[in-house]
Image (cartoon, rainbow, N blue to C red; front, side, top):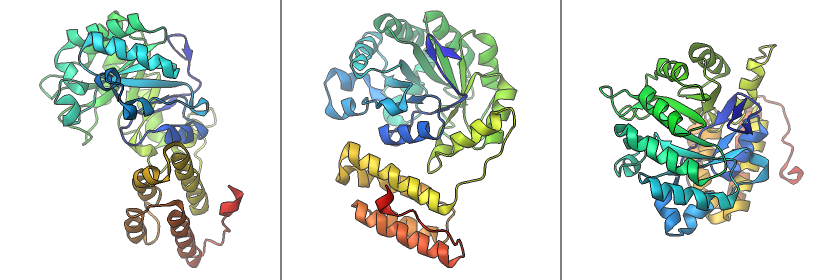
Length: 336
């Protein structure tokens, strides 16, 4: 399928997640089958001030494409200028954040707060669309709260303003990420617009992905939190959505540890070891979920400062697994 003139080869895409979906993680998810990725959200005003951290969020590697840079802000002219500046990093699309529920974003009129002003949403889309030569997409929520469910109105206005695709998260801003998620609002948006619709919210398994597609008729499904510590979910979704409806097994502990190490090594390569190890602590905790003695290993993960400590942690995890009779040998750090 196409978003504007951008071809997307697959049905499962990676959600933009602040503090998580950095270049290393996006590349890893593409390696396991994500068809499209979106960067962490970038402040349009931060770009105006030439903030170094803001610029670092937009670095895109060839191994993760196609990739959109996601911008947030509440001023059409500032968003348009930011989109022009973002083009220097070579994105395949520009995504506009109209769904972030975080107080530091929505409390300042951006993110999900934009849904309280549908006309402003349209003005921002039109300004950005006129500023860049690539497709422009929008990520919205069900509404601001239960008494202002207006995803269909916002989506139709954004389409009329030139949006090339709409991602719909089936929760209001008030819900944050708490259940239940409303997939029916995604169906309603899909029926109301002609551009591609990406469904988002509680895609936690291949079966859920298939159910979302069937229930809503959406064109793509966006995976967020379910990919944390489990980039293999894209492979499993792709296999299940194939003609054979194959249900792939979960990765074994040795594969999980090997991929975790590769993931963190990439983070160190892109960010430097000190910063990367601090940010990697949460990722390591997610990879360790469900393992024997996971609580103790996660506690150690929270103190990691260098790759050497991570390698020792992996050896201890595998030693515990071998005591449980896994019987597999680790490929070894030298093999990387």
